[in-house]
Length: 292
Image 1: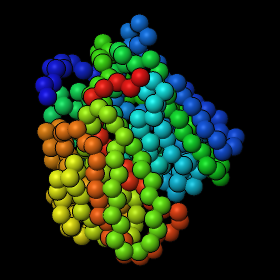
Image 2 (image 1 turned 30 degrees about the vertical axis):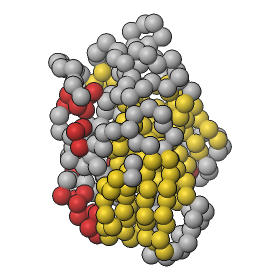
Image 3 (image 1 turned 45 degrees about the vertical axis):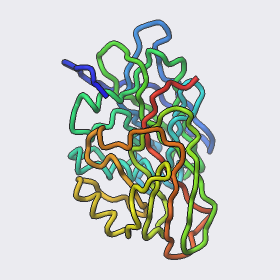
Image 4 (image 1 turned 135 degrees about the vertical axis):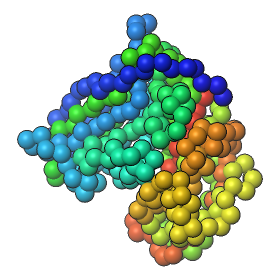
């Protein structure tokens, strides 16, 4: 794909609002969009999680109190990430970015700042020219330390652009908790083109994995040590208790799996029984059509 030349693009942080958190529940922030006026281009969302007095929660306290974050575009959920995944992703790209991880602040990056080419990175920022509503929702499961949420957005000084292409994260729950081989055949419910950037399996017991996309082999059976070595060679910090497939690990948009994804098939080998009710498979991808 071609990228528009971007000159003198400066980003700034804009406070969207804050929400007191007296009890568990859903806390929603409505972000400004174009709506016929000069709009905003979003590079990232930063959710500051505060205790009484304004101090930040620790990483462990966030996991206790916050379940997940969702972002809706025009009423459709296009980002769904657990607090654990958000925290781990912040550390995952530190080698490529040179830092940026802060306990107590949940960062959701739209512009994919780890891409080596700045034109590629900025091409994926979320424009609002053709967006009617944009909502960030924080789902709080308990209140042991959290008292306040503050949403800040990283935005730029350019005229608003159209949304697509844009990064999404979808979550697919797997209820199988047995040890041994898990063969997962799951259609991704997108009629429109979706490029695959990364797939994460949040099961600590996953010791090896194989992946086929559109019935074509992407990765043969690879143990966890081998998978992590490949990621480390590309300046990734492997995520604890995650098994990761990353087609886009070479820090260029051209390394994404770029074709219509109709289905993917995984073979995962679990070293033991999985605690709880199962695990999630998170698919980070690029969509090319604005949801309506």
